[in-house]
Length: 483
Ligand code: C2O
Ligand code: CU
Ligand code: CU
Image (cartoon, rainbow, N blue to C red; front, side, top):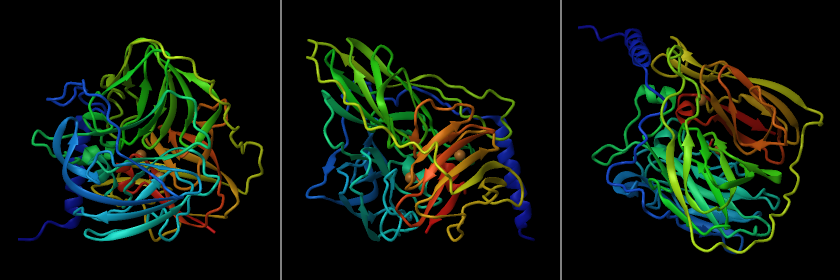
């Protein structure tokens, strides 16, 4: 009998995908916590590793194993046995000496998301591959003028990123402020999502999950389901919030509490600004002040409409419910007053500067034969799927460029560039009032986003990509070289 031809197989696969998509899968699934969790546990923070004498030396073991997630011992992946992995605390000018030990069954590597560091050699180099059973010594040097803030680390081996992050491999990095802010306490809140089977395994993604960008049915804060945070009235808490979800956008609210935003990613607001919500695309971080008022407040994630995949355009674009991620219980005697928050240094503004160059990058996705990617769907930037051996953008160190990021697809894509933060001049139809810096910017569906980028300091080769990590794995990534 003739084996089925490759072409016929591709056609069958494409039909299978189309059928699954037309059937429709909502972006937002169930919101109930896993059975067996009560939502009454106190928030626990990941273990903290602090640099000493200018060096943070870390043995980082990536391994499968029994880890505590959502109040259950499940089989997942962890860094040093915990989910999230340990929080690293460093100062500008410090050196990160990380030995990554790969005890996984697959290739992995390490990326320090948002750090302004060299992508070369054994620095923050996403092209390094650490094979199972191997180890690799990273040497990542923060400059003396590195912006303080919340950053994070996660694997970055193309094709494996979404699976490895979804299964538990992520951790926070804090670059400390030159002087501590006057706050009652600081909390690190790593938000992620996961789907666990009844037997305690991490669910595998379907083809449709990958196309949509998978969203776990359980949203975790520091690996916990609906943990409780306790405070007294009139306290000032500083929340460092990381969206480590593979694909889920977060629209965070804490009704009844006073929220002030200090910054997002490495970008600071010159004046701390009162807000009633914080929207974080996958990969974004917020530095948030919560001034406590008495009562019980839910930390909510309101559904975000990030569009639909091809073939679903006739269906509803948003579904699902508001999720309670955590609960803040405020009672007792009011705390005493603290010094006012200091004015932050004014952010750099590239708006009036001469540009070395303008570029336009187009992100596209869809169904079609003969394109990159598998199963008849393609995820491309400028019509090409990721190829680590191709240079897509050549830039000159020291130049400031303006990039128009175009999205021709019916879904939003959060665009991320390694090493160099981006000043957002326009995001879809929205023009920020204040100087706004991000390392992940949203490009709304069938719209565009305008950014300026200072290619300061670091020659080398690195990447930009969609931070819906399934899309990155499917090819929505390009290579940039700075010389
Ligand atoms: Cu958070 Cu290239 O990644
Ligand atoms: Cu990154
Ligand atoms: Cu995408």
